[in-house]
Image 1 (cartoon, helix red, strand yellow):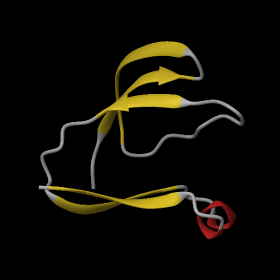
Image 2 (cartoon, one colour; image 1 turned 90 degrees about the horizontal axis):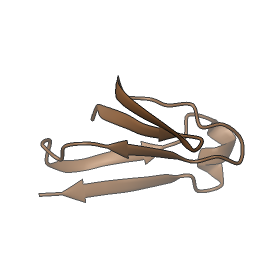
Image 3 (cartoon, rainbow, N blue to C red; image 1 turned 135 degrees about the horizontal axis):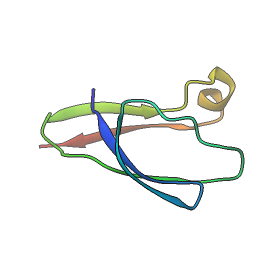
Image 4 (tube, one colour; image 1 turned 60 degrees about the horizontal axis):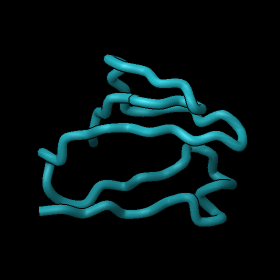
Length: 63
């Protein structure tokens, strides 16, 4: 599991917001920074089951 800093939410810059989950507004984007300090596979996914069913889920792996 990773925590990350939310750096931009729906086009508005942010700073200092540490999260492990973020709600992405409809038709918007978010930008995050995270430190890759927990090697191995991590699941990046939406918490809405229907979105997962349609592929909004990926495995992020780094060494």
